[in-house]
Image (cartoon, rainbow, N blue to C red; front, side, top):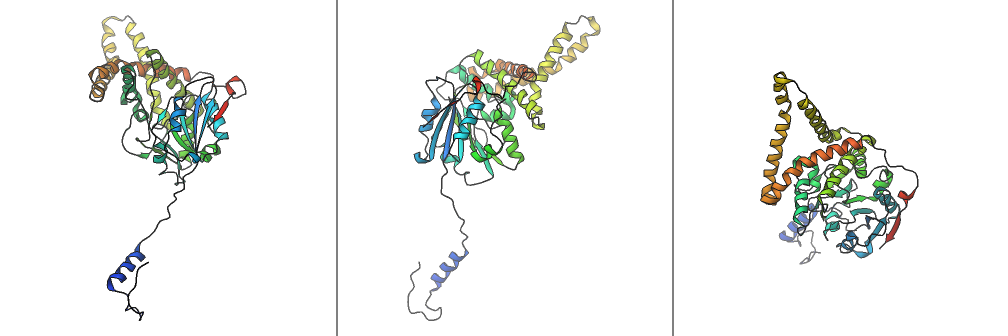
Length: 359
């Protein structure tokens, strides 16, 4: 309300300054702002009898109104089944999926809330990064996971890269993913025959329907890589198997890069056989030429190793070098296995038993 001076006589009682102010107010275009925060359900998949669930304690510390925050720990033996059971029981408009060892930053939900009012945004995710207090071996694993040679564009899952952007299944990961509940239920939830990679087919379908998937490098969780070399190698093979099984269920052109490691493994096998064939001087030049791709790959490994040193230090950077090659080979072997494995059954059984704990 502007104070007016003098007696109303036509419009002469409005001063020049007041008139200018009124005109300025008329020119403003006010946009409606929705300050209502939606209810959010945090879903954590855990094993039966698991005593310590790190994600549960971390979820309780999220900076979000307590009356709008629900936490469900889904205990079972098949994560995709567990998450679907929690999804059906959830009351939140948004579901925040965490693995049992994910430790989200307290401000994650407030950060994601910027996108909640936009109906086109269906998912918001970010990286899971190795905590600073992790042992040196795990930091070496993290360096491998965040390298371009090992994981290509998917390295954004393991390191905060770039700025907030529209993204897709190559960069988002289920251990740190917020999703609109109705968007998931419309598509029937997660494919229970898949683990891991059960979320990737959903992401592809959401994008096909015009939905936006947001990658925010600051929307992150702390999550330790595997504790031992054996567990790390097993994880790499599991990732490869999961990608192959996903391709069998939901083949897309975007899956083409995933065939590079298995084809590289096939090349190594044929190279080994070819080099072992006795042929004398006649075959020697051909054997040298057949090894040229391997020499190029070795140069790529050396270059990637050198690029890892500034951020990780000399020791960890050099130690990651051999693991880069091992990672590519193990991923490829896992992929070949996944092309021929029997997919998980969809019928009821012990794997389907899920216990939900609400907090």
